[in-house]
Image (cartoon, rainbow, N blue to C red; front, side, top):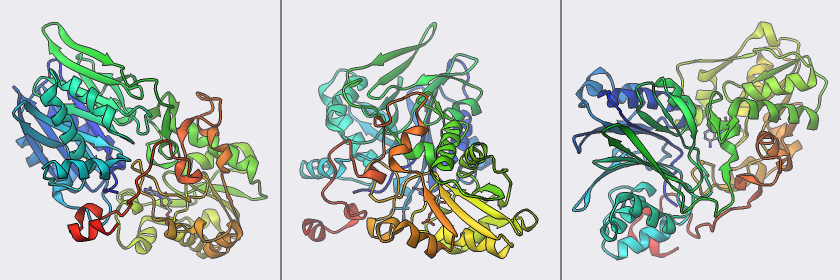
Length: 482
Ligand code: AMP
């Protein structure tokens, strides 16, 4: 399996503004939580592309100077990238640009293909040379190959979607068009909207559309391709639906639990409300006598409100996060230190209290253990840990970075053993069969509408046989030993 692409994409086609690069910059800023490893912007000016990409946060990569260097233009695409250890090099930064006889293309991608290894092998055997270890290059190759046979880039993308499997939310730019597409299961979010001057924007999450002063029109449907082009009387939008409604809708449930920003609305469901529902369900499933409910900032806060509302135990702010630190998990090293650097307890709030502590997930158990210790040191009398997701048991092939199975604490220990290991007085997870509570308002049937393979092992597509993360970086001799 290639590196994880748990990323954010943003695109804009302007009606009359020319500072598209700047708009993408603000859009990416709003999507920074989706990836902190690297980012990039490609601007289209009169059909020519100019770009800047690098490792680092949006504010670092696009300091005043680099942003000012981007030319004025009519369209642009951008990307924030999440990277895992081993693959954090500049060449994996997106959007990737392709120059081909049939035209130019810039491509930004969120998700992981589940048949990436197979496709890449086939392409390499037919002479393709890859410069990155990311699935995005595979997608670009396949679109380009199809483009040779097709009359238009959108036809090439439509054909490519017959071949691609797994998760992809794409924003693509040709000299004349801005195109976006979502895989037929709709694993990763993608939506579009309009700004006041009639420009169209496409984004991984609705919060980014709002950030540039736009209004959300709707989510891109699973399997849908949208093509935007500039006409004399404004921007024309075309929807291609050949891949729609063929597969079951399978949005990643972890987007609601952890990944997305709470002010985003994905597939018609508010992420904040979904988390509050999970907290309420958790209170019903695992009630406890306590004095205060506190959430782990940031993604545990909304579920903590839900737990408090349902249990009528007061909600309090017991943990403070250093605002200038990104998601611990995203920076791969020194995690133990980072919990302490990132979070601290308010002694005055937690001292002598029986605390219900809500977090979104336990992976290895390191964070929870550290948090329990922090609260004990601050004087908490009892700590009852509640997790607004089921135990992680399986790998994800669609872009969520989940540790390998042998490192997942829930694969090695029972719930009561984990409670003991992290030092909590009790521990309760959201049961896997109750995950639907996150989406119930839109999909009343608990068993459809989302992918929860990381919790239940039910994969909506075929899964790869060779899952080594560094497979594409290996010498051929080792690759063959699979
Ligand atoms: P651990 O310390 O290994 O148990 O990690 C748990 C913490 O990692 C939780 O507080 C989550 O917020 C965070 N987390 C879980 N899964 C992910 C993920 N796929 N990407 C980033 N952060 C995650």
